[in-house]
Every structure is written in structure tokens, then in C-alpha cells.
Image 1 (cartoon, rainbow, N blue to C red):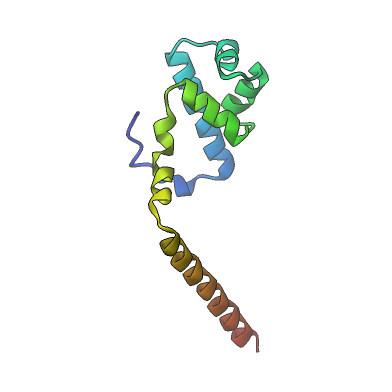
Image 2 (cartoon, rainbow, N blue to C red):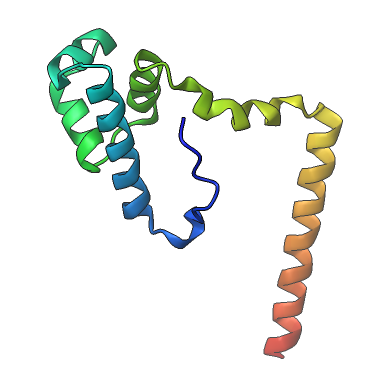
Length: 114
């Protein structure tokens, strides 16, 4: 996969990112010499699903995963597997900290509005 480390994805809108995903999928499909119909059939999808995904008009996460699996690009999900390395206690502590921070923000807002 290409190195995109110099791109700050936070600068893009949701729509721009969806379109970038579509372009990525289209390039991978073409590089592997699949037509949209062939890729759809191999994924168990309708061709229209591939068209929507590639054109940036959206798709379900399940569709996205099916297509990535067929194109051998599931390594894109590796960062998500790291979250499962947290123990239940670690998850509890993180969630507790988040709840505490939210309560603090609410208190500060009440004081500011007084």
C-alpha cells in the first residue's frame, strides 16, 4: 500500500474522505483487472453497491469490508485490532475518566453561565 503519512486526513470533510475511499477501491479493482460486475459477483453484492462505493455515494461498512476482503486490503483494519488488546479493567478506567471529564465540563458551563 502507498505511504500516505504526509496527508493530514483531519483536513478533509466526510464527503471528501468518502470520495477518496471510492477512488482507492476503484484503483485496486482496476489494478486487479476486475470489472465492477465481476467484483460485485465475487463479493456477493449487486453491481450498484460497487458503483455507489466507488462514486463516493456511500456504502455500508459490511459492503466496504466485503470489497476490501476480496481485494486483499483488509490490513487497513489493523489499527482497529489494537483496541481489543485492552483489558476490561483498562476499558472501565478509560470510560470512568471520560465520564468524569464530561461532568467537569458541565460544571464549568454552569459556572460560566451564572
